[in-house]
Image 1 (cartoon, one colour):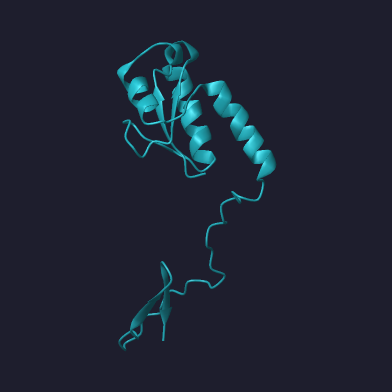
Image 2: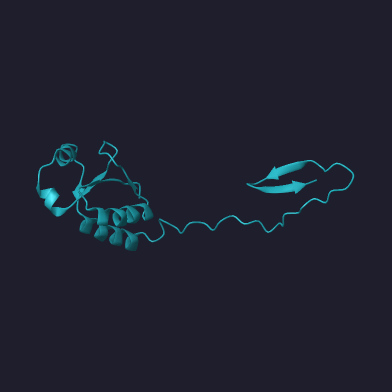
Length: 122
């Protein structure tokens, strides 16, 4: 929760899955490496190599992890903290029916907006 990840040389087939996992667990993805990035995710081959981004991340003491490590940490975190990310609240539904005003030969009463889209006539 609250971590910002940057994906480095991750195959396209894995990017969508990794992005969904991170977002579902309270993290975010940064398209560019910056000081706000808390972790860089790279393939094992890339981690062993020396790219400019990884060198910069190492210089800033930003952890560089692979997909397997991320998955194991998410599982461990979910087991240890099941209450931290509650399910999203249900959508707001009003039990008050919307009433269509009946038009007579007299002017309609003024309307007042309540909530998001509920109109009440007084």
